[in-house]
Length: 192
Ligand code: HEM
Image (cartoon, rainbow, N blue to C red; front, side, top):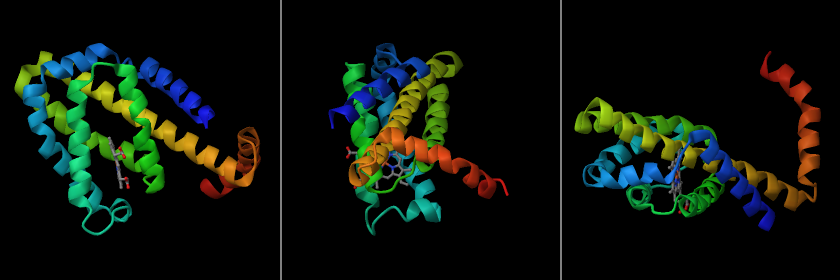
């Protein structure tokens, strides 16, 4: 099991390197917290309106689950404005990958819907702080969001691959080998 955590920690290094996320982004978010925390309800509303309007994403949720999910996302959003340790924050995001694997929330769903939150946040930041500071704040938020999405995708992939390996007894490197062996046949189907 420690192997999964070790791989996830490599994922943390990678998302930091690729997004450029640093503690300065969280410090900036905490400066703007008095205004930006007030955008939580609208952001979360847009997010869930989008998910409930499409049959594949709506199918993920149980009846009457919306309120509970909204509360979770608001709590997560508000937590972004009080991060004092970037590494610890990113480490804690492993829970999202796990929760999403359990509920079959594919990475595609998460990546596509995140843009709704991003656009809403960007518009509000520029309207509140003007184009210069507004964009600085928006880019900081964008780096946080992309790092979380990257890590959730990493967690999803690590967990499903490791779970498949554990339950079949096939070593992860062999799974990769079998995947590569099947690709030619799949390519014909995909591109036909
Ligand atoms: C930017 C995108 C997203 C973010 C930041 C996000 C964030 C979160 C967080 C923080 C949790 C709570 C994890 C925990 O601590 O247990 C969670 C759980 C959950 N999310 Fe997401 N999520 C995203 C996208 C989605 C999408 C697209 C769906 C469905 C189509 C979804 C469905 C769920 C469900 C069903 C749970 C509850 C899992 C459970 O505990 O049963 N999420 N998400």
